[in-house]
Amino acid sequence: MTIAELHRHPLNTPPKDVFSLPAESFIDAWAKALDLTESDLSSDDRLSLANAIRGGTNRLRVIDALKARRPVPSPLDGLPGVQALRREPDQFAMVENFVRFSPEDDAAFLRFAFSRICGRDPTSAERLELEFDLRRGVLTRAAIVKRIVAIARRDGQTAYWDTLLPDDENEPSESADVSNASITPSGLLVNTAGQAVVVFVREVENVGWMIGPDLMRQSLQIHEGNWSVQPGWLLTGPKRSFADGDWLLDIDLIQPPTAKLDVEIVANSGLDFLQSITLVGSFSGTLCVAIKREHRFLELRVRIHERSPEDSWLRPRNISMRLVS
Image (cartoon, rainbow, N blue to C red; front, side, top):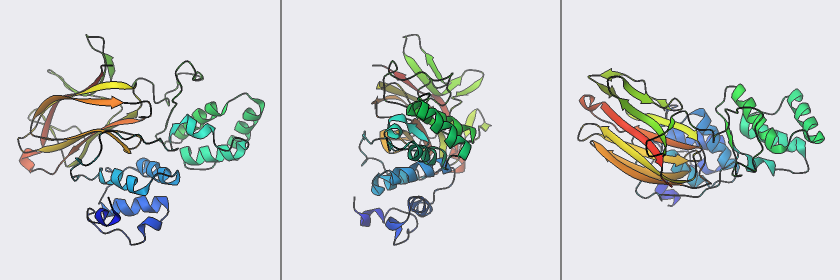
């Protein structure tokens, strides 16, 4: 895709010097051009994509990720089903991306890790403590990265760490570490066939809907037994890492015959599309999602297209994923 083609898609025209802007200004300019609101593109996601640019990700790839967030997107048929992009260092921290930075300079390593994960420099107390423990060999760099992720979460940010090392080679956490992205998502269960199942949304008879607690969603407003929905993101999350292998995405939902919605499975802040489909009318079926080791921080996205007031409802009976191999 050429730059000229990219300029035909936005709702507004970005500045002529957009490709020379700093990373965060570049993201803001394209977000404004694509009319993305805070609900479409959160501050955490803006920071994640800006960090990806600073880490060397092609800006055209980032524009593709931004365009996919438009409330009523252009068709995604031209996107490849699977991309293999390395996770860039940011608050969703791949440990390996940090521990190799400036191996002879612990102070530079700490500044880099704090900047990417916490969005700030370490305080003097934090720097002195962590440098002291590194110098004595009390903590490894991998353990330091996990501790910095915990500090980011204490600061009120959404942050997780993950590693590509096998479990038996990954050093144990100091405690039950909720910042480990590979810890089982809250909506995971085992079905009667012994398969691991992650439940995003499931209708429970005479009760209502069971919705995964790790998901962000529109306000649940019930009208005549259906979920009243608005255009834009309906569900997003959980940005957690799943076991690699073949997963089946089961979808069973009822909506008006002409109503449209998008269902996407993405990894690495939307840089890797693992599955995407636009559904028109009611649907019941299964899609295959191939998850590889480099696919981290997975996210389900359900996005509602513009629809008439009388069609602004949805009845999701089941949206879940199960591991088959």
